[in-house]
Length: 196
Image (tube, rainbow, N blue to C red; front, side, top):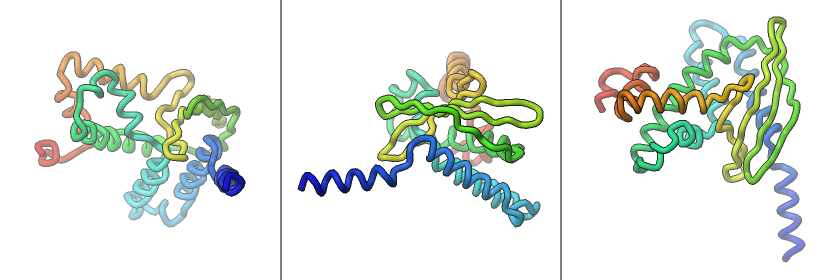
């Protein structure tokens, strides 16, 4: 039985993606969408954006990103409040990263290094274009055998730390409800949805 268990574990390990491979898989999906000639037509712009949101979204831990960006406020919230925040933050993030991805010129991503520590990983990558060089550190967490991004550090600036600073200032001057209203505005939710 022990031998069978070890064999199954080893077989699973062979097929489990490491953090760098997980990022490669996602970047390939994104490039497939970007290079799809049908989706480049103006009438398919919405479908293209949705496919980009889907490709990137399955590699992001919106819950972990939300928790880390809210800091102490997260502990004060109940399950439904947390879910509401995650949903809003997800919409804001999706809107932000899709606009950046659509401007991406398809330059190759060089994966430079990978560090693992207690269920977390950091993968350093570099994108070199004709105009500049961008170094990215992807921070990932292992969730049920899947490596999910919870932060991206671009040239030393953490996405989640930036949001945490913004959210902290908003809550200090306008309360948590003020933060939610600001997120609804950024997500372009119609007034009816905001009232709900």
